[in-house]
Length: 252
Image (cartoon, rainbow, N blue to C red):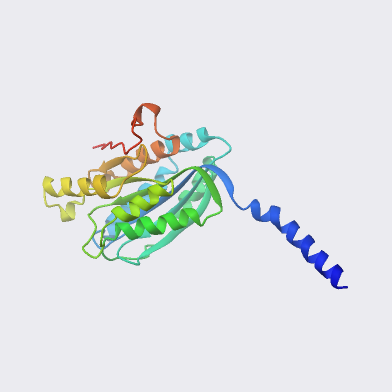
C-alpha cells in the first residue's frame, strides 16, 4: 500500500510538471504602463490620461503595430504610482494580439478608478514594475517599463530612482519615459528642462531607451500613442547606439 501511494504521488508530480512549465507564455513584448497619479495630477488631468490611454488602444496605428507583431502578441499591465509605498496594479496583465483584444484592454483602462494620490516616488514605481514583470506568467523577448509623469522625484524618494533603474537594466528590462509638462505647476522653461533632464539622467535606461515629451495633459493622447507604437514595434536598427547605452529622443 505504501509503495502504491508513493508511486501515485510521483505520478501526480510528473503530471504537474508540464502544466507548470506552460504557465510562462512566450510573447514578443512585456510592457508595464506606469502612470503618475500623484497629487500634482488633478481630476481633469487624470481623466485626460485615462482617456488618452484607452483611445490609444483603439487607434488604427496602434492596433496595426500590435497585429504586425504576429501571433506571439504582447502582454501589457497598467500600474498607478504616487509616493513611497503607493503603487498598485490598475489593470492586470492582458494578452493582446489583435483589434478585439486591444479593444478589451481599452475597456479595462476606462473602467479603472483612480487608486491614490501622494508624493512622487519614481524609484518605487520602477521597483514595483520590475516585480510585476518578473512575477507574471509571460516570457517576453523584450521587457519594457513605460514611466510617465509630470515632475521629478520628491525628497522622500531617496536616493532617487537611479538605483532602481540600474537594477531594472541589470535584469534585462528597458525603461522609457514620457514627461508631461503640467501647466498648473508651470514654473517656466527651466522647470521643463529640469523634469526632462531628471528623466534622462535618472529614470530611462537600457539599450535604445527613449524619452518623449507631452506639451501638456491635452497632448498626452498624442504622445502616448506615438510612444506605444515605437515600443510595440521595437527600436529601429539605426537607433541603436554602438556602445549599447541609452539613446535619448525627445519629441516635442
